[in-house]
Image (cartoon, rainbow, N blue to C red; front, side, top):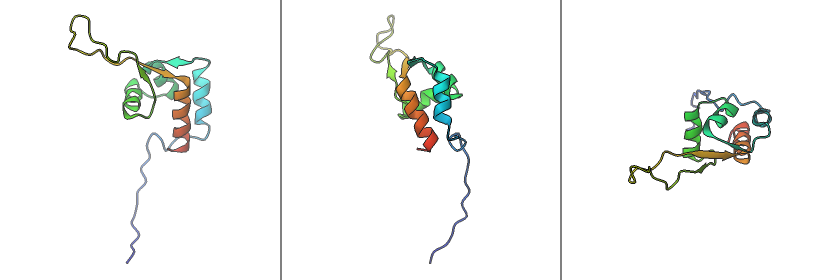
Length: 101
């Protein structure tokens, strides 16, 4: 016996993406090749916390320039991540967001 279920569709940050989203992101990047977290947040119109979450979740590829480094006065304490994001990684994320992946 098959039953149809009433399904509610909840909108989220990805449901409002327009087909021209990637182009808009590319325009906002101008000619810049590398970005910090705050700059990437400005390009995507989200918070820096959101960009850090994307990086930690693996959605946005970034290099941590502080990986493996420790504080000079406390050798047991690792330094906070300092991410650099390439233009290609930003375009890749924009394409995936545009297509809903």
